[in-house]
Length: 111
Length: 112
Image (cartoon, rainbow over the protein chains, first blue to last red):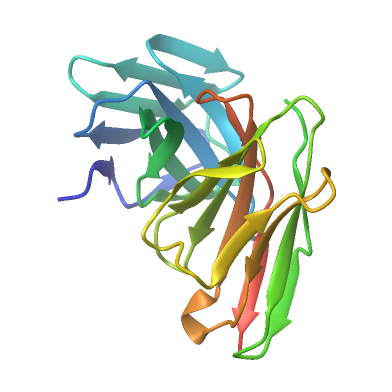
């Protein structure tokens, strides 16, 4: 079983739709990172959170530490939101903080 | 958010050749990390580096890999004798020691 599970794996939405991507993890963590990966492969950090909720523009991320679950929401989705969204959970092992990554959710927003 | 740059953006090399991937530092970042993503797979941790030493490495990071800051500036990942299965995106990340890590855009390595 993967330590970080994302759902759905693939998602197609119409422009304007509200989108939710979920991340569940089985390890103890200190923080969770949501990342966006564009078709060219580059990674952009969207959020790092360890509790509660964060909002940036049309993006909202929530985390429930007790339930080991996080969600990424996109309001009023747009074709430019099309990308792979990756959840990564971070913690400290052997003295180093590092991340364990999910397999990503491929989002396609149609005009 | 501080920028993280990597060079080259794409490297094509022949099997058996040595490659060096570079990450340009931010002056107040002391911790460096390399991650790898094989096409179609998830991103995986390779190694973390602090104070000119490896602080942790994964089982992927075998003897053909090495990291260093040769002149106190660029942080490099060297693959001594590339194999076909080394073809992947390699991401550098920098930070101050906690979980706030800033990822570079990646270097796409293609081994032929």
